[in-house]
Image (tube, rainbow, N blue to C red; front, side, top):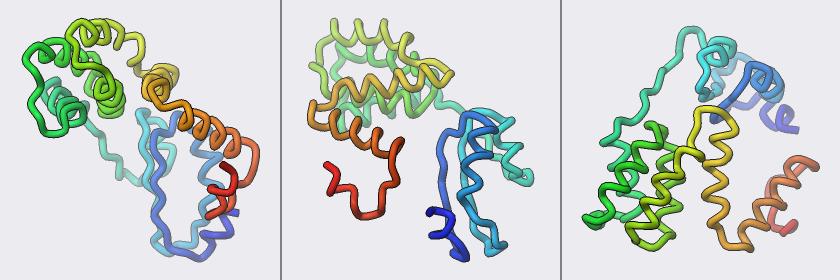
Length: 181
């Protein structure tokens, strides 16, 4: 259905975080190539995937955030322009450091912290457990996202689970999503 929708159309598709060459091989079948200057931008942590995608040398290697950049991003997301209270600076910087320069990890942790009390003991506890959620493999990334999911209101959790089930088991027609929930 996607292939038919894009057939003879000019498009820009962004696919984030491809984990394997096999996944890319399956996905690329959905995108017709009629030499009409359509483009697919994909991101991956793996050079092998980028090379396999026939990027013609157009590979841009992103750098991890520095500890200072991670801390700044965490503060922006948690405090929305306000200054971080002094008693939270040390545990907050430790949390930012434990995210290993990965913006997704920083943003997910910021989402968790923004909903929690601004309590030093709680932030210290979170800073000690961040390591178990942040990792460079797929499982660790999913655990990081699960942290954010676990802090969603119950009705939104049900919605996400239902949409995940639909996307795995049926064809979802554009504009019909609201009919399902």
